[in-house]
Amino acid sequence: MILVLFGKPGAGKGTQAPLLAKELDVPTLATGDVLRAAKRAGTTLGLQAKGCMDRGELVPDSVILGILAEELKQPQYNKGVILDGAVRTVPQAEGLERMLSTLGKKVDAVLAFDIDNDEIVRRLSDRTVCENCQTPYTGRKVGDVCDKCGGALIRRKDDDPDAIRTRLRVYDDETAPVLGWYRKNGEKLVTVNAVGAVEDITARAMRALRG
Ligand SMILES: [Zn+2]
Image 1 (cartoon, rainbow, N blue to C red):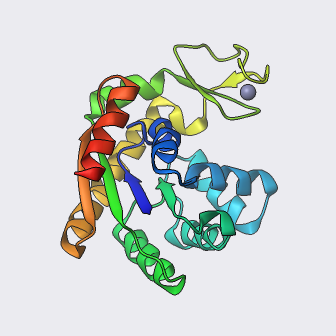
Image 2 (image 1 turned 30 degrees about the vertical axis):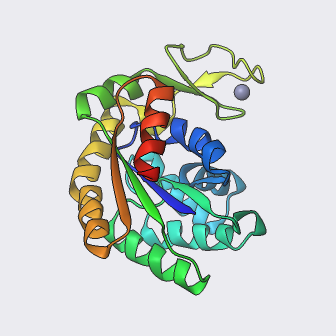
């Protein structure tokens, strides 16, 4: 099962991905994490990604697809994968489809998280992550200590309010048309209300996927 998670930055894709992975028994692949790892490693693709992310801009399609293509060849993805944040533009959706077909695979379903912009700004303004292990927290201050590893909590540069507004604008311009593309191309597209308790959203998503 290849499942693409789709929704605005802060819609909860990163929270739901591991929960859905457990339900569906496939690994997750979060493009953001892969990009940040590439950035830390200082590869050419990683450095290109870093500049874009620091400015709150989208990482170019060629960079994202290049990193994904390498990853998806690994054997742990043979059973399938949940792609979190992999598809943000129509060219990426087209590129992903082409790339998967060279691997003999295709997208089985697209799960779109539905949430409005005010709720997003409120959520992301309240988010910190561990600078060490990247665990996300809400309602915790910058400089607090990570429960898992003792690392310091920081605000990701792309979670600053100005960067959030840029990301939502970019989403409206470039990402929303992707839903239309998937609808037209016949993959199973399901929309789930992404406001509420985490476990309720997981249950809704699973019902929608199985329905
Ligand atoms: Zn940590």
